[in-house]
Length: 456
Image 1 (cartoon, rainbow, N blue to C red):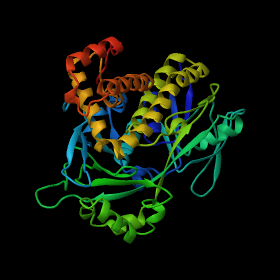
Image 2: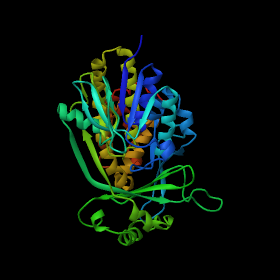
Image 3: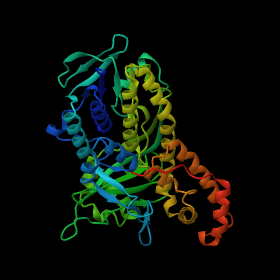
Image 4: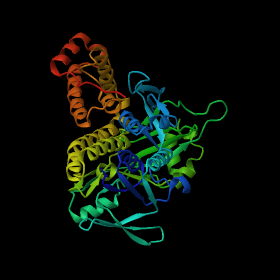
């Protein structure tokens, strides 16, 4: 039986992976991407240089047969290396051991690999093609090339994987309101770089960690790249009193701020003035939609449907998880794309809303709580409960990052576990003050066992 033709808008990470998964299931897939082909023209940035790949994204890549190729190009990160303003830095592991790590991957390198895989699977890629309009009644779209020359393309089934600024979402919303809501975080970011180390050390600082300089209300982070550099990101309030991007109008003001607040980091960025002056301030927002599709004709996926802030490292992972769910639903639905799209939204929207909330909460944790004694006491008590009663307790971060438990379940379970930890620590300054046997008994009486966990 011949499969339905599918038109995908957007050839970024989610679009390229979805296209490959659909082509492998027998669909005829056309992808229209507004950028030139990055394999020939070079990767055009504008988004974060590297990303954190975790289990959910890895599982999608395994489904596509690409996980090993990607991991060969990634750097393992065991945990958060926390750099306080005063005192020694220390590693806070993400998982129990090296079986639970995340991976720093190049956005550009990953996109090139996924485009090659999509093309090898039979996907037709069209570059330099911007979506001008979409007529959902006649099921035609209008595209424009770099010179502004327009053409029509028949598109009975349209999927928008064209990111947070989705042109297809705009066209769909004009046709039928989607209930679009964009909530700005009020903070921005700017990227800097620690170059590769000299001499025998390829990396200037510990390579197998995500480095955080938490300062309560703002922070810097650094992720390793395979060639030995680190991508540094400064997160600050966009406006208001010092420190904010308003109060750091130029590199000289920013360098003075770094000398005071990040004195160990500034010497690692030899091109600070050039980086600060040439890199724009990025914005941070969360996108919510009431509906992701218009019957069986058009659907949004990934950031086009549910863009989130980057503080849980799950934007790409969530989008990749989307692709597997959607490809399976379309393969099982025959020609009934309406049913597949409705089911996709029913399954994925509660999970997208949950990871959006957890990403916002994780910003507070990263910039402030990782250095807070009460947070550290809860973390230690949670680790002891997880070791003694692993079928009843797992830290929320581990559930998000290393399992396939639905985000919505993880969010609710994490809240219940946090309430229990607060109850157990009441009146205690340290996890050592809590009798562990009694704590385990309370845990098992309060919370049901975790669902069967699936790793890898």
